[in-house]
Structures are given as structure tokens and as C-alpha cells.
Image (tube, rainbow, N blue to C red; front, side):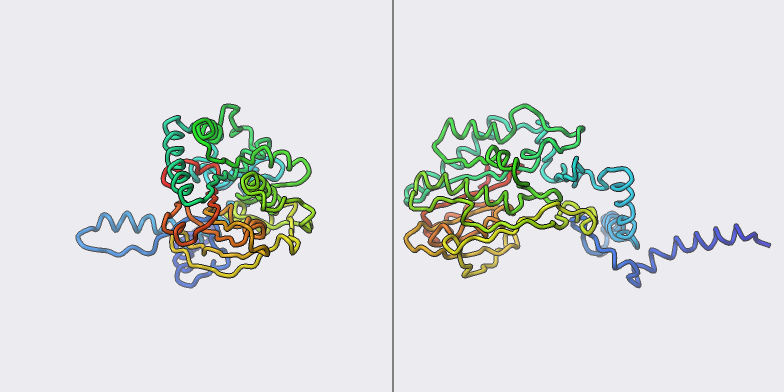
Length: 369
């Protein structure tokens, strides 16, 4: 006669075997959606005679899709974050001090970049500079001004909140090396706003604590710095000042970093800025154009003054929030999410100004601009 203990163990073991299969068939854990920002492939197809390939692909597929995976990660994430104060996905998200979170090494080794473990070589700086110089010369022949803007990593603006084990290096950064080479060999205007943002953070939070990006106040500061540099060449552009904006603070939400940890409903930014421009620096969006390269549409705007320059802005995800503030200073503005400057696009748009913006961790991508 079996003991109750043996019966419980038997039923428990059977449940462990049945539950993953039942979940996959019935979707019992569908309430726990994956927010890890990971790419998952579909069910592999068996093609004879490539059986070994199918086995490897199916093994990977099952690891990413087994029953109750998302629910188990949900529980694991809270145990790791709440009890141990650590990131459950340290390669994707670094948990810092005072409620700050940073992008991890799975994104272009960004943490190790700031630890100076991946310095930018002089040869890389030369190649990037040569590429940019070619664009500047080609655009100048068409009467077009060219500017390069670097959106800093949050690691550069809030290094004091990085955990001690990944503290930023005091050695010259990749951006420092690139800037020194570019400015000593060319006249290309480089808009480096690190010092401007560091000064602004004394009075306002300029980056999201739970997201990879600058917040709207930091965006406004960055836009003003870019406009002030462009004004040196085109003084017809109005002087940007905060009096043209209604700024309201409120409680923030959880950004992309804590979303990857499934903590977006529990861990939120301490402040969110709602910023509305005055009519004199406002713009109207006139078109949304599909962009197959990145999946994010290109956006066209018109400003209020027909005598101002036309802007073509090539940028990454940091440029999205800039569409709230920049277009109002131009006759027309076209924002394209891309890491390439297409000469055919320039020919079609015929802008007066081209701005290329890229986040600090991806400076090396400028080699292929």
C-alpha cells in the first residue's frame, strides 16, 4: 500500500510533466506576456536529410517557448530584483543606484564601452571622419549645411548612479576620441551636448530612470543646443528659450528597461515632463511615410514661417521625441529613422540643412553612413 507521501510525490511529478504541455495547448499562462525584448523564431520545419539541424533549431525553439516560461520569468524577475537588488537580465539591463537603470552590454557592449574596454581606435576615428567629410563636401556643392549630433548615453550623463562594479572609466571615451580627431581635421560641426545636459540636470531630470532615452526636458535641451549651433550659420532661425514652452511635471511611467524585466507596472520614473510649445514655435505634421528599413515611419512637418530653412533630419530612436520641438523652427522638416544618409533622398528633398543624429554607443556605425 502506497504511503500518502509517495502519492503526493507521484502526483507532483506528473503535474510537472503535464503542466508545460497543457499550457502550450491551452494557453493557461497567456496573461504573462513576454517583455524581454528578445527575438524568437517560429517552430522549425523538418527537412530531410537535415535532421541534426532540425534538432538544434527545435531545442532552441523549445527553450524560448516552453510552457509557463513567461510566468516563471515573471516570478524569477521579482525574486532577483526585489530580494537581491540585482537585474534578472544583467546583459540587457543594469540596475544602478537611486532608482536608475542602464542599458546593458547586449546592446553594442555599451557598459564596457564606458569602462574603456572597447576604446575607439585612431584608425576608426579616421575612417568615420573621412566618411563624414565626403558627405560634407557633396552637400556643400549643393548649398546644403551639414551637422552631426551625438545623443549621449545615460551612462555619460548620470555616471554617479552606475553600480560600483561597472563604474565608468576616467580615460577619454570613444566620443572624446572621435571628437578630438574630427574637430582637428575638419570643419564639420559636431554638436556634443554632454556638458549642456550635465549642467541642466542640476535643476531637472534629463533622462528617464527606467528607459534608454532622454526625457522630454532633456530632449528640449538637446534641441536648443542644436538650434544654437545652426543659428551660427543661419541667424534667421529664432533663438530657442524656455519661455516659449509650457512645462508641467507629473509622475512617470515604467520605460523600456523595466519593461524587459516585466516590472513596468511596479517600477516607474519619479518625474515625467509634459511640454507644449507656444504657437510661434509649433509645427503641423503633414505626412507619415512608410519606412521599410527600420519599420518606423518618416514624418513630415511644416512650420509657421515660410522664409526659414528646410531641414532633413536623419536619426535614431533619440530623434523621435525631437519631432515635438525642432520642426517649428523651420519652413519644413522631414525626419527619417535611418543609419544611412541616402544621396537620392537629399536630391528629392532639396533641404537647406542636413542633420545626422546618432546615439553615443553607436558612433562606429558612422563608418557606414
